[in-house]
Length: 316
Ligand SMILES: NC(=O)c1ccc[n+]([C@@H]2O[C@H](COP(=O)([O-])OP(=O)(O)OC[C@H]3O[C@@H](n4cnc5c(N)ncnc54)[C@H](OP(=O)(O)O)[C@@H]3O)[C@@H](O)[C@H]2O)c1
Image 1: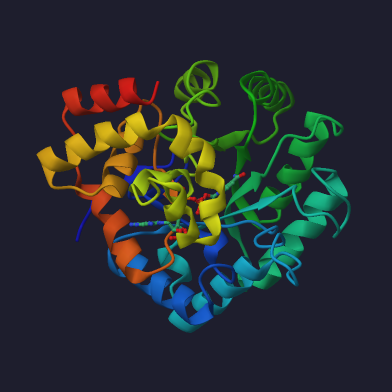
Image 2 (image 1 turned 180 degrees about the vertical axis):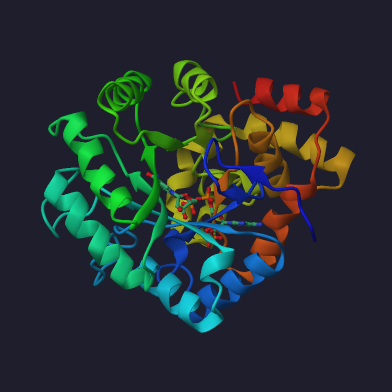
């Protein structure tokens, strides 16, 4: 498959409109499955992989860094470092120099991530969340040092509100500091408020690439959770009660479009996202080759304007 690549905002990087979400590596996908998924992703034209130092610290017995370690082992084994764009994040894992975005934390966390990834550079380094306790100038200076040292190519902001992203962009311009080139908000058909409006407008105005997370609403938008019984299917199932109670109208609209196009619901969810103004490439994860093959099919799905509008209205 040769899917059309999109440029990541104003950076040198490109990706097909699907980024592999790496929180599954070492959590819901063991090492061997993770290797097979990564091999398959690249074989099918995928290039950008999203992870974070904190993945998967929420699992009993884990301390964070499990996902990066598996990606690092795979890079070493496959020799594919130059074929992929690696995005990782700092700011949610306590330890290694303090929490959040203190400059010492950023410096120490970057070294730890580089070591686990077994690479000399991170392509996109995200602030995992905003930190109102550390001056934004200090945060950007800390990232700037990493860029100057060649350890980071560009920086991104995840889970930022519009006003804080705007002030960070202003400070970067005023002080000649690096600015955020990529934005990673939560955004999908059933979670719209955090991105649509001011944040979306800001990203478009500044040519900031947008790689939204939870592209499948943790699996709800695949249509596999339709009743309380369905929630037993996966460790993620417990998150579905509210969506099953309030968002089944979206699934019904997706079912109709699946009938018309022959596409699966997962593909429709991701194609809708990829068609939204400002969105470069949605992030989604998969825990089996079948799931991955399914979501990769979204790259080539073109929904009509009418279909996109119907989905937009159903999810409003
Ligand atoms: N910046 C942030 O704060 C933040 C927060 C969360 C996530 N993220 C990023 O976004 C990525 C995606 O998030 P996510 O993995 O939690 O949610 P997601 O992409 O919305 O949902 C993915 C899950 O849905 C299921 N699935 C995938 N394809 C399927 C298919 N074809 N049919 C049926 N089920 C399918 C799988 O779970 P099962 O194993 O349950 O089937 C898979 O792990 C993460 O890996 C991470 O990189 C970022």
